[in-house]
Image: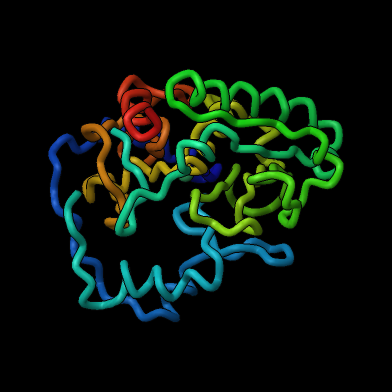
Length: 270
Ligand SMILES: [Zn+2]
């Protein structure tokens, strides 16, 4: 999710006392961008089969770039107006009620090494936060931890360590292919990331894995509008676990589920 540079901006925003937008408003017109310009604006992960990263922690596969561009960026595409917002492309992007009760994952013991137990504990904490409010169940299938890769078909998703990616962690959406269904934690997440904790970052990332979009994409006044592929589940929530603090968010401290996050999650997974 957040970059260190962005984290530094949080203090700047607080010192300047920039208020968050509280009124719903239409997204601003974006200057037309060619597909090549759009693709060049994304960073690509620097390992084999690396994905294109959008808004710091959203992974797009190369095959998805053109349709994303055609639907959201191309000249002439009209954005529609819309706390919690679910990814919506002609329908909610979410797990079926059966699949939501068995979201299995492995934690790569070889990539995390001595940090393995730290990650297992943080994942247990982060999954518990969503499980306590929505009818979802994450299952750590530790039998696959020794072979926890993007091609491990014994789990829904894999959790692995990467380094030098410019994000603290990134995730996926329920409609991602198996090879893109990874929660990747950058080694920078094990450094000094106060006021965040690894569990807090994972609470945010796991929100994406069950379909939630960035809350700050709902208002152009956040400066972080992404696209209109979402459906509101609650009123706008500047404190949402899915809101980047540096995008005019009002969350301070670690990333935690707000009461609106909880009611929105419950409404999507009753
Ligand atoms: Zn995110």
